[in-house]
Image 1 (cartoon, rainbow, N blue to C red):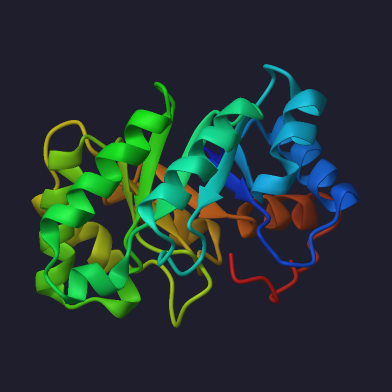
Image 2: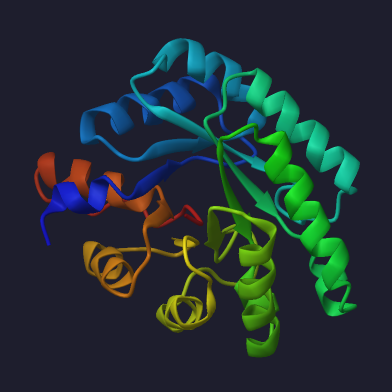
Length: 229
């Protein structure tokens, strides 16, 4: 697979609690240089990043992140605020407790409300697959589809594990027409990225791919292995 095809599917990500504007600006520059799908950054930097990038690069941010147990009203407000600040894409975390409680209608309604608050922007729904049973993952494929979200996404990168090939295979079997898939967390190589894409993932949430490309360009050095994404 051509490297450019991989880059075009990457949400170049920096969500560390310690992220500074200098670091955010750096991943914006990298995203432009490698022509990634977007930069995925904390909500507090959306306005500044959008001012810096303009229409040159999509800005993605996270809602209810990373635990998902905010109230629906808070998630809707976060989304409206992010959109007002210039966010082009929204990645929200579901209320995992509601899923465990089989509160399927509440989950569906929350996603619908956040989607409405997106005002036409792309919505990706993070279900945190490492905390779910296979039955719960399949159930969420249906709920995300019914709620009208654009993507189902595996992981925050802040829990016990990230994306797996098996999860993307499962999504591909159970999501409805028009729902795309995003693999995030723990994508450590171009080989991983290529396999996720081959299995049907349309987006990859990772910082590692661009870091690897930059390391190769710098002379074959190994990219740092410290980041969750």
